[in-house]
Length: 397
Ligand SMILES: NC(=O)c1ccc[n+]([C@@H]2O[C@H](COP(=O)([O-])OP(=O)(O)OC[C@H]3O[C@@H](n4cnc5c(N)ncnc54)[C@H](O)[C@@H]3O)[C@@H](O)[C@H]2O)c1
Image (tube, rainbow, N blue to C red):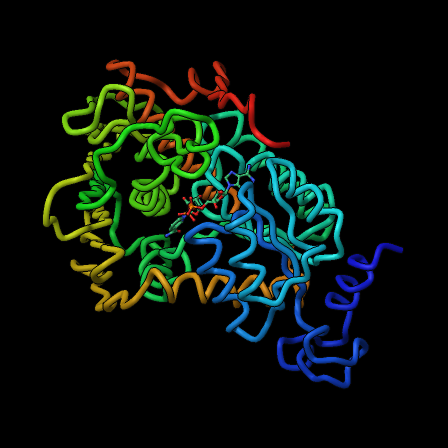
């Protein structure tokens, strides 16, 4: 039997398995380190290195393998976690070597273009998956993640998508109240993502440079509406609890060069029962105090949420809510803990997958409406099933 299967079965079947019991050194694998979840990092850039440290600091995981296209990125994470050279995997297909190793789980922190392929391969290799948002850059990618989530559940694997807002107690409680009807009938919603960062750059010249600086490369990031503003659209679709029917609006490059991604979108989405969502996102505005915000207005009250602020409901059934605090770090920490709980307590429902697919499709729909400068329906987009292609010729395999 494959060693990782043995370990996973152990993690899953230990009577009343909890984080606490697993961490007792006396249990089957002897050394305390070995009773932690063994984790491989795929993508050792900014967030990969950062979150690998959070996983390790939680005390619930040992980072035992890493992969990245670039050797220098691998070495940095490898050194930080004492990973042997034989478990550091370079190149475009390095992640496949990592998946053949005995890790129990992987955290995927590569550019979004690679997420569907890498997440599906991880599930097929029998690994639990912790995946960065956005899950994909196009419709085929979203559908692949939906399928990977289903496969994971069927194979008793955990698949978690790391949206920090979905891990926050105030967002969760506010949304519970929305679901029980505290807003009454939702009349309309608005979401926005105004941002100082993002820069005004363009894609670098070579494919290799593009892997390092992928943000302005459309197929790699999906444009900033998908890569960044999805945080606001995810909350909007969470509140509205439906797929959008269509979107229409404008977007463009007022500050970024012509071969780059857009720097602004202003769209109107239509949800079922003619519920509108007004959505704007803009980047590279000097000195702007960033917001990732969503409000929804109902016949009985309204909800207001901001990733960098507070969450509350006002109206006939008010909810005081609270400040989101350092959601960037704390949201990831909750997801890291809940990923561990799901693995050890055998929770394979993988509830973050379907909403992430919905939010991602909503972002892709908005991008396409902005690009095409006409109304685009979700049904049309799904039927079209168009893939964004990144030319990997010349890259190391
Ligand atoms: N708040 C959040 O949830 C949040 C914040 C930041 C980033 N992210 C997400 O994390 C992911 C990574 O972003 P980042 O900021 O760390 O980017 P980054 O460029 O710093 O890191 C990405 C790494 O992936 C490597 N890479 C590229 N192609 C690869 C391939 N085919 N196989 C293996 N490695 C490959 C790059 O060399 C790089 O080291 C993105 O999906 C991003 O959207 C999420």
